[in-house]
Amino acid sequence: MTTAGSSTAVGRLIARSGDDIPVRTPRVPAREAAERELSDPRYHQHDPNPIQRALTWFWDRVDDLFQAASGATPGGWIGLLAIGAFVLLLVVALRLRLGAVRRTPTTAGALFSHTPRTAAEHRSAADGHAAEGRWSAAIQERMRAIVLALEERALLTPGPGRTADEAAAEAARPLPAHADRLRAAARTFDDVTYGSRPGTEDEYALLSALDADLQHAKPHLADAAPRSRG
Image (cartoon, rainbow, N blue to C red):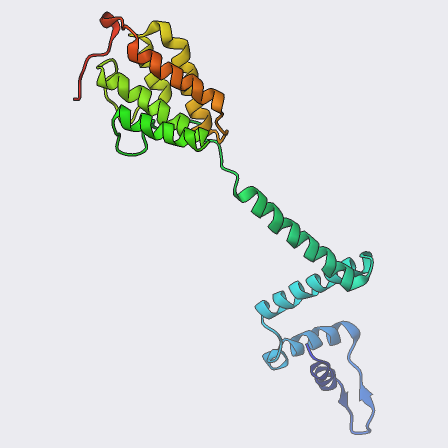
């Protein structure tokens, strides 16, 4: 409501007699009459709409907030901007530091992520990685060589989607004397593949020794898995 509108409304409520003496209306009726007069749409043509009023209120509150923050911060606005810049840099630094960290899966994935090769091919790849000190990759390839060698001997049922733990449990039936070493090899494979833990030379040596021993191990044929590709 504008001041001009109020003046107009009040002016209309004061009538003057022929002797130029104001005729005053009692207080309550005058107030009611003024309210009726001021409700006339003519006095509200230029009032801001609800959205404009809401935006004005919001920016007033934001301004109050920044004014209060600048008053409480040493250095005023310059200090506030310096703190904001520091916080932004801290967030960026943390994002860059943590972005490269891999999440540890809650379940192990398949032992073979690509089309399986022969045991000899995986064994050769493992030796190549080991020669260059890439122990995690060498461990992965050696474990795949172990499993494929058992499949080639019909001691394991071929299963491309099998996990290392499943392969170890299945191989332990025809090869019970090596059950503990098979389980340990599967855990090592899972740790370096899905747990983001670097493999070591000693761990690779253990898997290589297991691979060599299994090639000459005599299975309990009554417990061996039948050869089936169905």
